[in-house]
Image 1 (cartoon, rainbow over the protein chains, first blue to last red):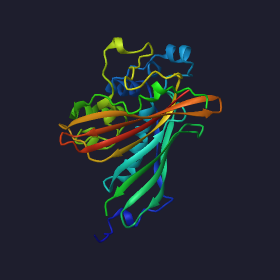
Image 2 (image 1 turned 120 degrees about the vertical axis):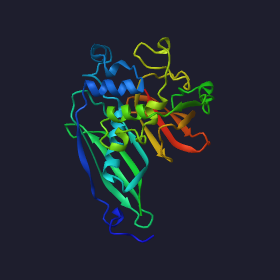
Image 3 (image 1 turned 180 degrees about the horizontal axis):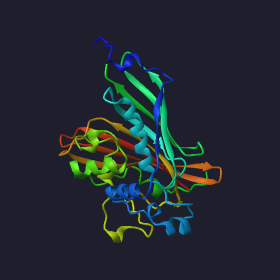
Image 4 (image 1 turned 90 degrees about the vertical axis):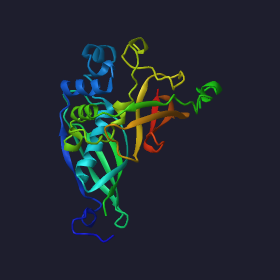
Length: 142
Length: 151
């Protein structure tokens, strides 16, 4: 079980930043996402309903779609060097179609023996508010 | 405590849904990967399912007369709560085994807890559900625990 130069474990450290990514959820993405779920919730596509009946400022970006971006943030950082084992997150603040959102994160802990890594992830909006905070555990290949 | 939760309501803790068995297809994996903006080729090609693919796989497919006027499927696992405005919730997902096209997966949901807390603007009801997803060998593939808040 010797560590090779290629192993990520030798280089990953607490405090490392996960690459940031920008998201611009639009009507097309919202349509495709709700279609594959078979989700008919009107706050996602019916603008008069979302704004006039529910009182939202716009069409709501589905919470689990934002959750998926947290998973992608961890997985893109891991690449083929590890496996996402678990993730927890919550949808704290609503986001709206047309918003620009940003995902990113930071390594919290690395166990150099087991190769287990804990990371903190987030999706933020343009004003820097965290709309979805999360934590994930991944196993780096030793 | 204002005592919003009756004995009858609390007795629904432990309620379990009928197991649902669904087939994973390459086409659905590809659709999900595209719709979520995934950039990894193995998912876009549908070779393996990305994390959270269980969300579309097990989203309730119900007939239109079972949707409420806002377009939401009524969750039959839940009792009728005295507070009805759903707030943000959280979830924790454990990915135990990878999911491939051709896999048959079975999900069972359990209502694991209901409790009340005093929020800054009034009482809140919390409920927790636990979804176990197993393969045809009855081995755990994914576990998802959710907490939802009603106000």
